[in-house]
Image 1 (cartoon, rainbow, N blue to C red):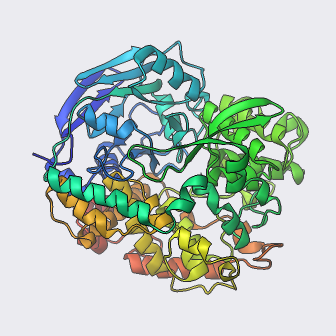
Image 2: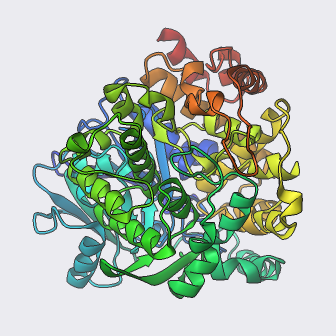
Length: 631
């Protein structure tokens, strides 16, 4: 028996309507743990090289971890994976809420979707009953409305994921939504779901999960909740959630503003965590078993009417607020709501809109080409671009391709300020004076995403202090001098092993990241759930194996993938920060190459950033090494 797991992979061929249930392989659980690990290995094994991301042959994988669904702190995480329509390479996205636990209670660790439904459909799962049902009635509706009406039809106990019009129209950065505000946001996961003609998946599970030591787990789980609540930052964290970091990021000069033209937003106090609490918040909103609910459910009153929205959380504030320079938290919340309903990733959508605004500002795109003037700081401009993008109408058809493809088509220098890595738009930390964070963005396997290694704390404090400790240290200690380039690889790699490991286990990393909850607790929890004695170093070794595997996947799938894929946009190596705390700073091409040289050597990759045969064999990927050699 596989303790901690439901024990079954559910595979649905949407084309044929075929449903197959197979036992979860013990070696898959042993070598890849769960969640992100399952996604990475199954994508490598089951996708034929050069598969089009929008073709029926692409896979959409939904996977849980061994700690998902147990009575442990923040055990509500679900992992999604596919071949990315945004980057062409490895893609995954993580989502909180309640869907993953429900999937496990229904009896499934992994839901593997292939093919394309003949007509708009949704997948119904209630324990052993699995059916593909018509969804024409919901096609074209928003993601939030679809979830609400499906719950009304099926019952509130069903946990449902949906896509909006952006996913239906294959916008390359469309997301999957759940629980009226949780998203698998990054890499275009929702576009792949739309290409499969799948509007939603509804799950209800009533089963239990086998546990190796139920009494020990109960005691350890109760203790873990108490330890989280006893952390010094606990009381300060919950009221504002991730929005609470806004002031600190701005004060250290890392807040993206005007399409990353600069790194300090003077109006930040109108869009920070305090503004969320004072002007929007109705209640806290957490995921399954979460003692530190980061979601803030609130009401935004604007000239466009009132909307109810979860958030905005920090990343949406940074990109919709700072990068598009909206002037109030109500405007940010409204734009957040529009993205949620349309099924757009707020990060990529805001980044694409900011690029279009700068193109208009510089005369590269005219009002006639766009359909109207679009300007930074104007909510109407932003909403116009979001709606056009989701519908792929007019200028939206270009923007729906993402900034990498759009700038390549437009040209005229717009490539230099298309803010992405590998085709994935940049998240909420400007890094021209933060070489560790810059390296983390450059080498993240899915593209410019912070969640693989939040290294900004190292750049500011020289340590992996929790976010709470960094903010508590105060404004003066947070200011950065010119950061030294060199010596960042070791800390970035360590974070790239620790943080994604939570995605394998199926628990949220925020207790570790924001509060400093010690990682050693998870070693014991893993044993009590699974009965497998693995030290923290043993678990990190699995995370390292997965990191090399995801890199190898992109090497296999993307022609010419390598060092050039890791460079940030030219803006960051040519344009000094014009104002704010980091005025005058930038990282030259020579400094970026120093960062990559050091990182590649530490990883055991060649000078082009390709994992060597020796490295792949060392981490247990001999078959992957042979496959890359044949290529």
